[in-house]
Length: 58
Image (cartoon, rainbow, N blue to C red):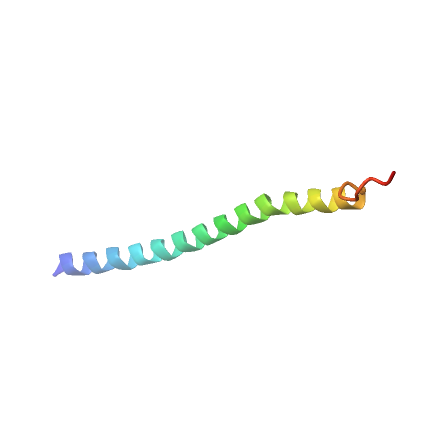
C-alpha cells in the first residue's frame, strides 16, 4: 500500500517539475530572442538615423 502512495507522489512531483521546466524553456527562448534580435534592430535604427543606408550624392 505504501509503495502505491509513494509512486503517486513521485508522479505528481515529476509533473510539476516538467511544467516548471517548460516555463523555463519558454522564458529562456524569449530572453535569447530579445537579446539576440534587440541589438540588431537597435544598431539598424542607429545606422539609419546617421544616414548609413542613404546613397551617396555626388
